[in-house]
Length: 157
Image (cartoon, rainbow, N blue to C red; front, side, top):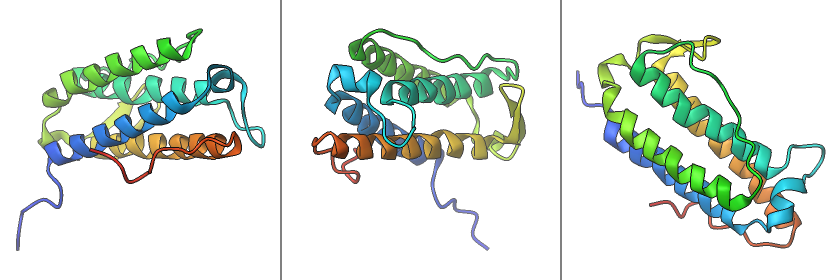
Protein backbone atom coordinates (compact mmCIF):
# COMPACT_ATOMS: atom_id res chain seq x y z
CA UNK A 1 0.00 0.00 0.00
CA UNK A 2 1.39 3.37 -1.03
CA UNK A 3 1.71 6.23 1.44
CA UNK A 4 2.42 8.81 -1.26
CA UNK A 5 0.04 11.74 -0.88
CA UNK A 6 -2.13 12.79 -3.78
CA UNK A 7 -1.01 16.38 -3.23
CA UNK A 8 1.77 17.70 -1.05
CA UNK A 9 1.44 20.52 1.43
CA UNK A 10 3.53 22.77 -0.85
CA UNK A 11 1.32 21.89 -3.85
CA UNK A 12 -1.77 22.73 -1.79
CA UNK A 13 -0.32 26.14 -0.95
CA UNK A 14 0.55 26.76 -4.60
CA UNK A 15 -3.02 25.80 -5.55
CA UNK A 16 -4.46 28.20 -2.96
CA UNK A 17 -2.15 31.04 -3.98
CA UNK A 18 -3.10 30.47 -7.62
CA UNK A 19 -6.73 30.99 -6.66
CA UNK A 20 -5.80 34.11 -4.68
CA UNK A 21 -3.97 35.52 -7.71
CA UNK A 22 -7.00 34.89 -9.92
CA UNK A 23 -9.39 36.43 -7.37
CA UNK A 24 -7.14 39.49 -7.15
CA UNK A 25 -7.36 39.89 -10.94
CA UNK A 26 -11.16 39.63 -10.74
CA UNK A 27 -11.22 42.40 -8.11
CA UNK A 28 -8.97 44.57 -10.30
CA UNK A 29 -11.45 44.31 -13.20
CA UNK A 30 -14.25 45.99 -11.24
CA UNK A 31 -14.92 49.67 -11.79
CA UNK A 32 -14.59 51.48 -8.46
CA UNK A 33 -18.26 52.28 -7.90
CA UNK A 34 -19.52 48.89 -8.98
CA UNK A 35 -17.06 47.13 -6.67
CA UNK A 36 -18.96 48.67 -3.76
CA UNK A 37 -22.50 48.94 -5.12
CA UNK A 38 -23.26 46.42 -7.86
CA UNK A 39 -25.07 43.19 -7.05
CA UNK A 40 -27.28 40.66 -8.77
CA UNK A 41 -30.31 38.96 -7.29
CA UNK A 42 -29.81 40.31 -3.79
CA UNK A 43 -26.25 38.99 -3.43
CA UNK A 44 -23.72 41.13 -1.60
CA UNK A 45 -21.50 43.52 -3.58
CA UNK A 46 -17.98 42.33 -4.45
CA UNK A 47 -16.46 44.56 -1.78
CA UNK A 48 -18.38 42.67 0.91
CA UNK A 49 -17.51 39.29 -0.60
CA UNK A 50 -13.85 40.35 -0.69
CA UNK A 51 -14.02 41.49 2.93
CA UNK A 52 -15.29 38.05 3.92
CA UNK A 53 -12.49 36.31 2.04
CA UNK A 54 -9.97 38.57 3.76
CA UNK A 55 -11.45 37.73 7.15
CA UNK A 56 -11.48 33.97 6.69
CA UNK A 57 -8.38 32.56 4.97
CA UNK A 58 -5.49 34.68 6.22
CA UNK A 59 -6.85 34.97 9.76
CA UNK A 60 -7.75 31.29 9.70
CA UNK A 61 -4.29 30.04 8.75
CA UNK A 62 -2.74 32.35 11.35
CA UNK A 63 -5.15 31.03 14.00
CA UNK A 64 -4.30 27.44 13.09
CA UNK A 65 -0.54 28.14 13.11
CA UNK A 66 -0.71 29.84 16.50
CA UNK A 67 -3.29 27.39 17.86
CA UNK A 68 -5.64 30.29 18.66
CA UNK A 69 -9.26 29.13 18.61
CA UNK A 70 -10.46 32.53 19.85
CA UNK A 71 -9.07 34.57 16.96
CA UNK A 72 -11.57 37.19 15.82
CA UNK A 73 -13.52 36.94 12.60
CA UNK A 74 -13.37 40.58 11.48
CA UNK A 75 -14.42 42.04 8.14
CA UNK A 76 -12.47 44.88 6.56
CA UNK A 77 -14.30 48.09 5.76
CA UNK A 78 -12.08 49.98 3.38
CA UNK A 79 -13.21 52.97 1.33
CA UNK A 80 -11.43 52.25 -1.96
CA UNK A 81 -10.77 49.23 -4.14
CA UNK A 82 -7.05 50.07 -3.96
CA UNK A 83 -7.17 49.68 -0.17
CA UNK A 84 -8.76 46.25 -0.56
CA UNK A 85 -6.09 45.21 -3.05
CA UNK A 86 -3.32 46.48 -0.77
CA UNK A 87 -4.75 44.47 2.12
CA UNK A 88 -5.23 41.47 -0.18
CA UNK A 89 -1.48 41.51 -0.86
CA UNK A 90 -0.68 41.83 2.86
CA UNK A 91 -3.02 38.92 3.55
CA UNK A 92 -1.19 36.80 0.99
CA UNK A 93 2.02 37.61 2.88
CA UNK A 94 0.26 36.47 6.08
CA UNK A 95 -0.64 33.16 4.47
CA UNK A 96 2.93 32.68 3.27
CA UNK A 97 4.25 33.64 6.71
CA UNK A 98 2.12 31.20 8.72
CA UNK A 99 1.80 28.30 6.26
CA UNK A 100 5.19 26.74 7.19
CA UNK A 101 4.13 26.73 10.85
CA UNK A 102 1.24 24.36 10.17
CA UNK A 103 2.78 20.92 10.07
CA UNK A 104 1.24 18.46 7.64
CA UNK A 105 0.88 15.99 10.51
CA UNK A 106 -1.68 18.41 12.00
CA UNK A 107 -4.00 18.26 8.97
CA UNK A 108 -6.26 15.53 10.48
CA UNK A 109 -6.34 17.34 13.88
CA UNK A 110 -9.70 18.79 14.91
CA UNK A 111 -9.48 22.58 15.24
CA UNK A 112 -12.27 24.86 16.41
CA UNK A 113 -11.62 27.74 14.01
CA UNK A 114 -12.77 31.11 15.36
CA UNK A 115 -14.32 29.15 18.25
CA UNK A 116 -17.19 28.01 16.03
CA UNK A 117 -16.04 25.78 13.14
CA UNK A 118 -14.78 22.51 14.64
CA UNK A 119 -13.36 20.48 11.74
CA UNK A 120 -10.08 18.83 10.82
CA UNK A 121 -7.47 21.43 9.90
CA UNK A 122 -7.33 20.19 6.30
CA UNK A 123 -11.10 20.67 5.99
CA UNK A 124 -10.75 24.25 7.26
CA UNK A 125 -8.03 24.93 4.68
CA UNK A 126 -10.17 23.41 1.93
CA UNK A 127 -13.04 25.64 3.09
CA UNK A 128 -10.82 28.72 2.71
CA UNK A 129 -10.18 27.74 -0.91
CA UNK A 130 -13.75 26.62 -1.68
CA UNK A 131 -15.22 29.79 -0.19
CA UNK A 132 -12.92 31.89 -2.34
CA UNK A 133 -13.86 29.98 -5.50
CA UNK A 134 -17.55 30.42 -4.65
CA UNK A 135 -17.32 34.18 -4.12
CA UNK A 136 -15.03 34.65 -7.11
CA UNK A 137 -17.73 32.92 -9.17
CA UNK A 138 -20.17 35.56 -8.00
CA UNK A 139 -17.63 38.18 -9.08
CA UNK A 140 -17.50 36.55 -12.54
CA UNK A 141 -21.29 36.86 -12.80
CA UNK A 142 -21.13 40.51 -11.75
CA UNK A 143 -18.41 41.31 -14.28
CA UNK A 144 -20.34 39.62 -17.10
CA UNK A 145 -23.51 41.49 -16.08
CA UNK A 146 -21.49 44.70 -16.29
CA UNK A 147 -20.26 43.78 -19.78
CA UNK A 148 -16.69 43.16 -18.55
CA UNK A 149 -14.78 40.06 -19.61
CA UNK A 150 -13.46 38.29 -16.49
CA UNK A 151 -10.05 36.62 -16.49
CA UNK A 152 -10.00 33.02 -17.65
CA UNK A 153 -10.83 30.84 -14.64
CA UNK A 154 -8.13 28.34 -15.53
CA UNK A 155 -5.38 30.99 -15.75
CA UNK A 156 -3.70 30.41 -12.41
CA UNK A 157 0.06 30.25 -11.82
